Structure formats: C-alpha cells, structure tokens
Length: 510
Image (cartoon, rainbow, N blue to C red; front, side):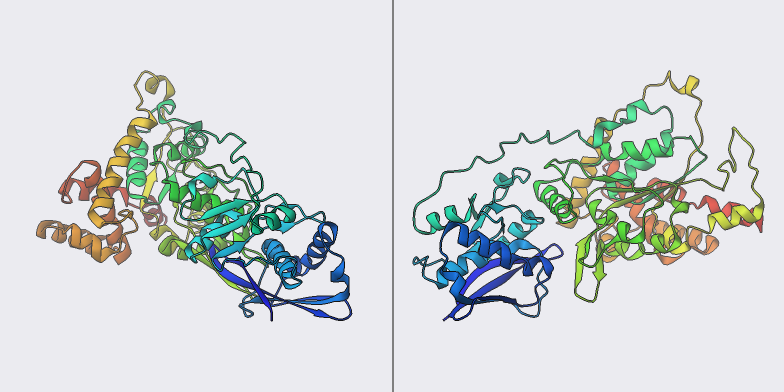
C-alpha cells in the first residue's frame, strides 16, 4: 500500500494540492519520480536520498522507490516537494509509525545534510494552501515573509528533516524566532522619495494626477524635455492610498515568484522599466512563466518614460491587461495568469526633437517626422489612457515664491474619494475599473448631461470607449468634491482632460 503525503504546487499565483504518493519495494535500488516533474523536481531524488541517508537509514540502498506526484496531468516545477517526498519514504519503510493528519502539508527544499531550506514562492504557496483547506503546514522559516500576518493556518517552522520527524513523534522542536530581521517601516520607502511640495508650479498637472490617483485612471503626460514629466510621475505614488494587508501580501507574493525581494510595506509599488526592455520582461513569460513588470506594478504604478521609444509590439501587448486587470501567459507546458491592476503613467515628447509648441525653443522636425513619431502610440493604446495632459515648462523664479501643497494633503483627499467609491459599489473597486452598467446605475446622468455628451461626441466623432472614459472621469471629479451625483462642471472638466493634443497637430499637418 502506498503512502500519501500532501504538498502544494503553484500555477501562477494559484496554489493547488499535490498528493505525493510513495511506494517502496524490495529489489535493486532505484528511485523514480513520475507525474510530469521538471528538472528541479527530478533532481530532488539526489537531495532527498542524501538527506535521509545522512540522518537515518541506509536500508534505502536495497529498495526500489517510486514517487507519483498527483494530479499527474499538471506540470510540477520547483523544489516544493522535497520534504514531502522524504516524509513519504520514511513513512513507507515504517521509520515513522505515527499517523500524519490529512489536513497537513509539507513545503520546503532539502539540502544534502537534511537541512530544510526556503523556496521561491513560499508565501503564495502558503496562501494557496489556506484556500485549499490545509490547516497545518510544515515549512522552513524565512524572515523576509511576515508570517504573523497569515491567519487561519498553523505554521510549524522546522530547520531540518530530523526536527520534522521529532514533531511527528510528538516531541516538539525548539521554537524558531519569527521576524528576527526588523521589518522596514510600513510607509515611506517608495512613495516619499519625491514630494509634490518640492515641485514648482504645474498646478494643472498636479490636479490631473490627483484625479488619476482617486479613480485609478491611466494618464499620459506630453511635453518637451526637462519640463517635469518624470518628476511628476515619480512623485505620483506618494498621493496614492496605502495598500491593505491583503494587497501588500499579494504584491509580496508576485515579487517572490519573480525572484525579487519586496518588504512588507503598505507603499504601492512603482515600476519604471527602460524603453529597451523586451516585451517578455514587461508582460512576463519564460519557459516557466514568471511575472513581468506589469504584474510587479500590481496595485501600484507602471511608469513608461519615453513611451514612444518602446516597441509597438510591447505597447500593444498592454491592451488586454489594461482592460482586464490580469495577464494570461500561454506556453506549451502551461498557461498561467497573473494579476496586473496598475495605473499606467506614460510620458513622451510631442515630436522627435521634443520642442513642438514649446515656449522656450523652436522645433526643428519636419511635418512627416512629427506625424510618424506621434503614430508610434497606436490609437487603441491612446484610447485606453483616461487623461491626456500637455505639460509646459515653468518659470522657477516665479513659481518658487508660491506655496506648493504637499503629497500628504493630496493623499488624504484621494483616500476619502476612494472610500466613497468603495461604499457606492459595495466592494473595493474604483471608478476606472467598475463595470459601466454598475457605474451608470449608481450615478445616472441628467437629461441635460446626456444631450451635452451626445452633442460633443457627434461633433468630435468620439468612440464609445472615449465617452465612457469621460463619464468615469466626471464621476471621480465629483467624488473629490464630495458630490453624490455627477455635476455639470465635473463633466466639462473631464472632457478637457480627455482632449487629444495630437489631434490638433495632425489636423494642422494634414
């Protein structure tokens, strides 16, 4: 009769139960793992055998061992199953005589001396085990993970295979200290590197960014070099509301899967990839699909500086994530989905030289060059940007005397507006992402507003998506003002924020 030990596998962010079935026979020594294991799982044979022989019994050298990882149709990757395989083998040869509870799972990689080591993706694996009904998890201690924030599951931290055996026999090992590495402050690592109070002028831009933060709207900043586009974008996370504990754990899980460290803080992540980055690094992928920049910006900001310099293929691949809030990566071996709910902030120059319509320098580009440059941002991508904002250079001598509002004050207004949206829709969903039928159900346009919007749309030949963006923006502007209904003034301001500066240039060129 085979022994079944529970472990957990990961498919993207989703965890699934893996039954580690172990059968030990008499006969010439062999060790076989079946159930679609990848190279890292196949190599566990040597690790597990060395760990057991160094600590317990040499009788395994006269045995034939077969390990089946079920479900057999699901590709298994990563060294998650080392500890479970070792426990299953020791149980099969009756070295472990005690019963192992069914709602108990084992996670961790083994070194050759039997030490249990952390594995990449341990946090999402534990969260996935909770969802699968596992009540007790044996796993290594990783002080970069805020285990104290995980409730609803008993975590038993073990240093070695020997300690695991002692626990199963009823002898509890020494307690390991949790979070011996001090956790960083929950606020301030990303968001406060730049503050709005240190940015002179740009009142219209700051207003537009406040609206974008309140409703999670995408924004495109257009202006000459050195006018402050990058500075405004880098200060933008400072006015976003702090993440909840659940959102912070989700962000941390994505960084773990990508093989990067991210502390447990409530700052929204800010990603700023270079325009030479490949489409795989932006979207995610690889033979074993890993999260890309759009997933690492989940619940935060993705800033694409010099947006027109990114390849057209890469920008067009953003279309689906911007609509659905997740990215699906299909490979021959598997198809995985990662969350990708981010605010896209793009910055670009109006022309190749950057000085079209500048108030400081003359543009030296030809009309053909200007037209070709502006066409690098495709219509569908531009249509998915809620706010299109033209930025001009400011006179520092004039603006330095004026008081600039700090990020904390703006953030308080943004947080209040977000709470109004969450209360209206009954869930943590913003105006930019709520289904349009629910938006219109909760915020009806007046007959005058409908007629006004239809008249402007007909005259300017606006698409349906364009009109919906205007309504979403107007709803956010009204929330910032504390209004229950969409106001006429908010609708007019939303239309101004959606004006495409490239259209004027195109008409002049043509």
